[in-house]
Image (cartoon, rainbow, N blue to C red; front, side, top):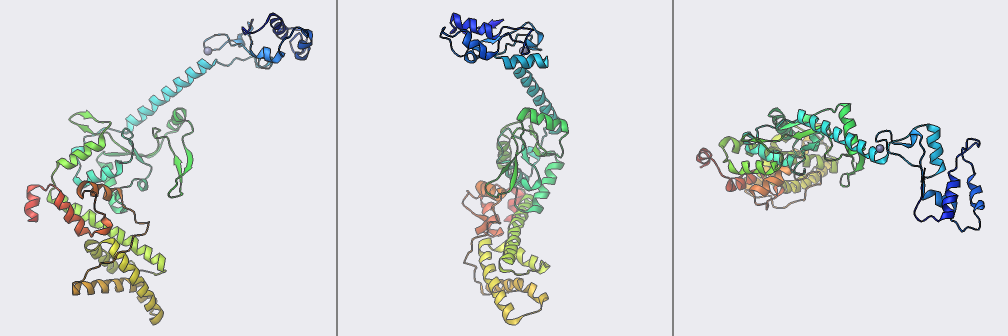
Length: 417
Ligand SMILES: [Zn+2]
C-alpha cells in the first residue's frame, strides 16, 4: 500500500507507483530500476523520482512492516529501508513504543535508586541533640548544597568544615555515629547501571577552574558513593527541605553551657593553631629552611595562636626567617642547631616584646594555602556580625567577641563573672 503526499499530481502518482512496483523476477525485487522511471514519464513535467518517493510512504502486509509491540504499521520511505527490512526480516519498534519503553526503564531505575537511598539514608531525630559546635560544623558542611540534595561530598577531604583535619575528623566520627550523616561506601553494579539509565553517562571528567584538579562531574541527583546528610525528624515529622534553617534555629535558640564554651574555645584555638603550622610550612618552603617539628615549636605556636593574629605572626615569621638565614651564613652552626633556629628566633622575639609590653603591629597577608574555612565564615556571620576576619584576630580575641554576642546559660555566666 502506498500513501501519497497531497502535493503529487496524477502523472507523479503513476511514477511513484512504478517506483514501488514489485517483481519476483528481478534481482532487486522491483520491476524497474530507479534510473529507468523518470525517462518513462518524460514530457509529463514531474519532479525527480527520489524527491517524490521521499514524500510518500510504502507499507506491505509482511509482519516486519509492523511495530512488534503495538502492532501499528510502520511504513518505509524508500527502497533502501524496504530492502533492509526484507533482508533482516525484522521490524524495530516504532518511535512511540521506543520512547514509552525508555520512559518506563527510567521510571523503574529511578524507583530503584530511590529505594536504594531509602534503605541507606535513615531519617533521625538529631537536630535537638546537636551541641552548639556540632550545629556550626554541620551547617558548615551542609551549606553549599541545594536544599533537597542530601549529598555532601565524596571523601572527608571534600567536606569543608574547619580547615583543621583533626577537628574535621572528630566531627565526622560523631556525625556518623549519631546517624546525622551516612557514608555510602560502595555502589552495587545494579545501582551504577540505574544511574546511567536515569542520568546518562553521568561520570564525565571535568576540570575545576580554580584548582586545575581533575574532577568528576556527577549529576547532582545521581546516587554516588560518599557522605549523605540524613533527613531530620522533629516531633515525629520528617523534614526533607529547609534542614539548614532548622539547624540554624536550633543553634540560636539554645544557650551556651560552660562545657560548650570551653569546647568552642578549644576549637577556635585549634583552628588558629592549624594556621600557625601551615604558615610555618610555607616559611620553610619559601626560605628553604628546615624547621624541626619539636614540642618546643608546638608550645610556641600554641602560644602564638592564643594571643596573636595570624597575619601579625606571619610578618614576624618572615622577618625571623631572614634573620635565621643571615645567622646561618655568618655562624655556620651544626645542623641539629640549625633546625631549631627559626623557632628560637621567633620565641626569643616574642619573649622580648612581652617583657617590654610591646605589641606586634605589622601584618603580612597570608599565603593562599591558608583559606578561611566554612566554619570560620559561618561563625563570623552568626556571632561577629560578619565583620571580623579570624586572620586578624587571636584565638582569645575571637572568643571574647563571641562571648559578647552569645546567649550564655545561667551557670556559664556565673562561671565567667
Ligand atoms: Zn509501536
